[in-house]
Length: 194
Image 1 (cartoon, rainbow, N blue to C red):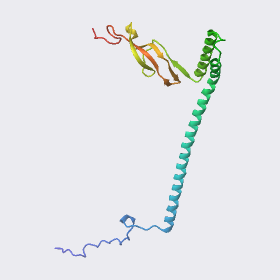
Image 2: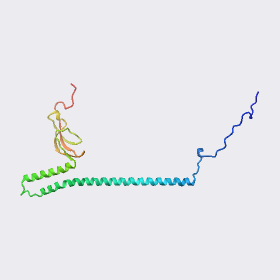
Image 3: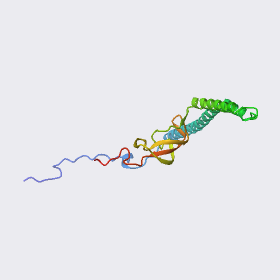
Image 4: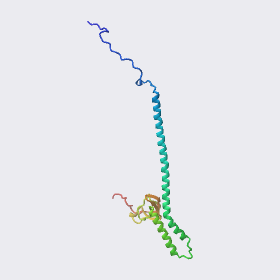
């Protein structure tokens, strides 16, 4: 029988003891050079941030100023288009009615209206005043209703009490209208399936 002794197994070498490092959770104080370098990087980043913030602030102010100036130029352009017609209107307002016949005054006012519409149309203004078109709450304001004499006229504009105006795609004022409604028998589009 063999006896086990300590000498029978070779002794495993133990690794030498390592000093505590970052992986062991101990803090290592950075060198003065690293601190100076990191402080410099932080100062650079702060400087870049402040410059970027200032540039953005300047951009916002410049954009607001440009938008305001653009709006003022557009308004001035529209007024410039209208001043000739306004001058003509002022001349007719000061005409002596005792020395001018009604037809001359009527023709003068008609000319001023055409001149104003020419200027407004050049600026993109159109009138919303069609009768017989389907009622559209996006461009019409229903003031009242009136019975329709035909089912096909149900929910259409029967009369325009005050025209509306658009400038391009923007509605300046909706048209105030009377809406026709079919009240006899079945309305258009409805049925009981018989």
